[in-house]
Length: 178
Image (tube, rainbow, N blue to C red):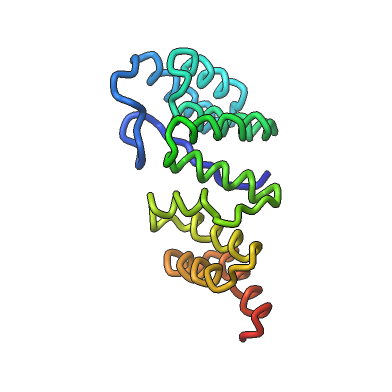
C-alpha cells in the first residue's frame, strides 16, 4: 500500500497528545516504537506499541501508532480494527481518521460523506495530503465541484504537487473544461 500514514510522538506532537497521567513506561514505549518505525523495524515497533497498550489499552495515540506498524507489515485488516478502536475511544482523533481514510481509499471504499478526511481537515486545514485525498474521495463519489476545490487548495499549499496537478487536470477534462 502506498500511502502516507500519520504517527504521533510524545510529548508535544503537532496534534492531540496522550492523556495526562500516563505512566512514564508507556511514554517510553511509544517513543521507542516510533523510533523503530523510523528505522523501518515494523515488528519491533508493533511490539513496543503492544506493550504500551497493555498498560493503556484505549489510548488512541497508541492504537493509531500500532496500526501504522501493522500496515507496514501488510496486516491491513488488523490495522483497520485498531484504528476503529482509536476512533471509538476518541471520536475526533484526527490521526486515526486520516489513517483509516487512507486504508479505505486504497481499498476503493468511499464514504459518501468523506467523513474521515473531513475531520482531519477541520483539525489541520493546511495539511496538503488531506486536501488531495478529499479531492480523490469527492471525485469518486460524484462530488466534482468539491473535488476541484480540494485539488486547488492542495495546489495553493504546494503548487508543485504533481499528483494534485494530474488529478485536477483529469477532473477538468472529465468536466469538459480546459
